[in-house]
Length: 568
Image 1 (tube, rainbow, N blue to C red):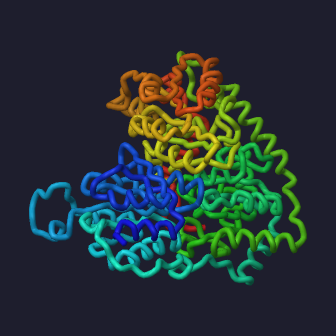
Image 2: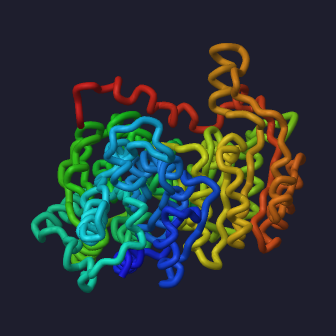
Image 3: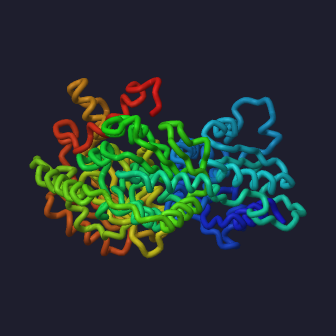
């Protein structure tokens, strides 16, 4: 069989369902065989977005997918999204074609469609390799998947000599991944007993979910644990969706009620989170108050190398998160029930009241206030919709006023990569089937890859895009106005994105009045095809009216300076 045919068989063994790649002569044999054998091919307009699409699909399924780039510029276009995947701990297989070995190894200048990409991918990727002969294909692909999943997941990169893609080779039968990758392991009984003892002896425990909960599809198990612990539930930004924000146990960690719960807690249980910087490393702000250094820390983590880096732990349960969560649930079910916090109901009531006060306090503005946009959009977006987020200040308005009611929330919560939204939304919609996907984005972020709206139309993916159009990079404009007095290349000309959406074959809505938002969003969801709702918002809000919780979220700027020598 050919190199390309064999590569597809290896991908099928790993349950790959999607290859995100433009059609190209240097990958045509792989693409032909993939199409023949049932792997779906989705071609982006830009290869950077191919990796974002694969990331979105993974976030919805927990299954690793493939993005491919053509030799030279196509491969280099994937580099920044490889960096993003590395920072978000997303396993991706990135494959790039390369000029033939004779050209690759030659001492020459100005080679056509050539750059030494392997070394560039070595920094962000967990594993890189060059395939120059079909005889090495099996071993290298196995190692790539092994490394991508080992410890903390991340991207891997393989490149191949394009001239060997249709070279025939006598391959042995493919191996099952179970024969070349370690299988998930549970924690030992003693470690789990200690975890149960910590929880049962705590008077005021709190639960915090991280991105590993939602990416490993562990929502049901996490909620079962929350039932047993009967504690306030918080999430890191990447863990949003572990429980709906409408759940009676949920508290937004930056709210007054959330901060009080943290301060009063005597045990912090982190599930699939290493307490990222946006959470004050789990040791600043409210984490330093109240019990502070005396608060016990229990973590469930897959990778032992992640334990204790940002915040020291009193006990760490290390093992496959699905298995260890199941063990913890079983251990608590055998023990006496944990009494609920006496204050939990009060804290939840106060949190809901805080949201209502914030909504009532949204100021009137010349054009639509971005917070008003989120509040109105929430009325029209289906509760079970998959929510994708992209932007700067847009994320702050979303967190305060767009309640997350579904289990699905996708956002580059660590690297905060502007322009990732459309790619993530495409990948999410491919995985979501009949469930609808809604992208909440700023106009600045949308502009990075607006051409991908055509990809939505081409593949008939009915994503609804809601655009906070303040004609600016809002966060940057705010800083410029404070420090310079005027914006420097942080504002845009007015653009009719709705007309662009219609010109590409989708549905477009243009909104200038707040009362028009709900019917416009409802029409977009009813259109049955890709839709874009452009909401013209007040540009001045970015520097005259900071969103709620902006100060708390901005705390990351000084986190490392607060305690340079101490880890609680």
